[in-house]
Length: 120
Picture 1: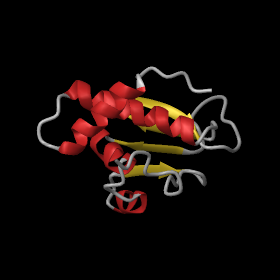
Picture 2: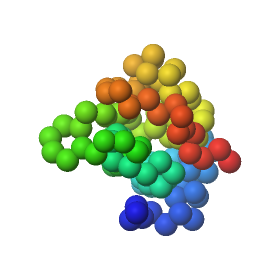
Picture 3: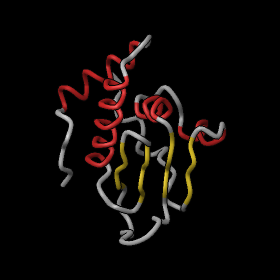
Picture 4: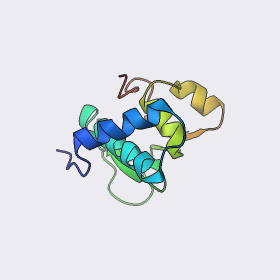
């Protein structure tokens, strides 16, 4: 079970504000990122892939072999803006990887099947 740190109402409000565009305060972007990372962990439970969005946060998700020590074998890392574009369906995972906006390593690191997380 995922322990929520971001209230879902606050998280969705932050995502909607980011989706409107314009100048979005850093705190709002971080809240949106943390919320969508939590949504990934809820919608795709597991511990086989670590998704990192520094400096906002990281989460383990996706069913499969569990990683326990050291560097995880399946890692996805990106920046906050790219993560939010992926989480909201504004950017396809394969396109982000091809453009060098996402670093994905490991056989389970393709998030195409679990994104987007928020579409409204």
